[in-house]
Image 1: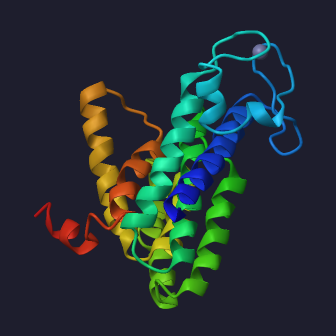
Image 2: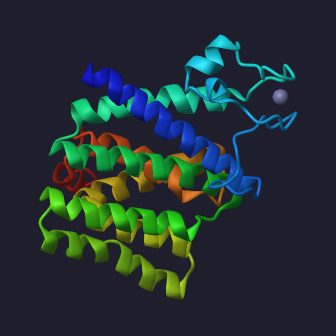
Length: 238
Ligand SMILES: [Zn+2]
């Protein structure tokens, strides 16, 4: 029963996150605006907005105009539910810490979608991670001195490098700093993994400029789920 509610919470959260990302990209108000069909603009009733269920019942189409609902909406809702269940099962630490990690992943997903399209990260989302970091201090998962050290590492050296040569955006560095404060030493594993992912994508797609948050996300999921030990990772490249 607990896992069912976790799935439900995850799908509701990621449904909201998906809507938020889409509205920010379309320049719409994501707090006050009512949910509406992106095609006919018809305001949706509560029965049209039940994550996963509404999409399946209407067979992926708007109930009012019959236009196809983008498949990413369904993927976010169902994937968010699965992700929340996986985090609850795999992540170590107190229940509050695990809920914070689920919220953190939702914020990163919104950032990732916006960053991929615009190569920028809204500042209020970066401060959202700072708030989660402050909240996570209550769980005692990471000691405060460790949080402070990894707020600066690897963000500060990167900030200095970027003063000389802009290899990363300022938003990306702020993301690393606040994530370091939230995660502690795990940020090193996430950073190394994201750099490897970036190098692989650059070689395969022959691109010179990449959105950083999707790469960061590729590093965060295995690390936060406890599948990768940051210390092992540090020694791997040698
Ligand atoms: Zn419609």
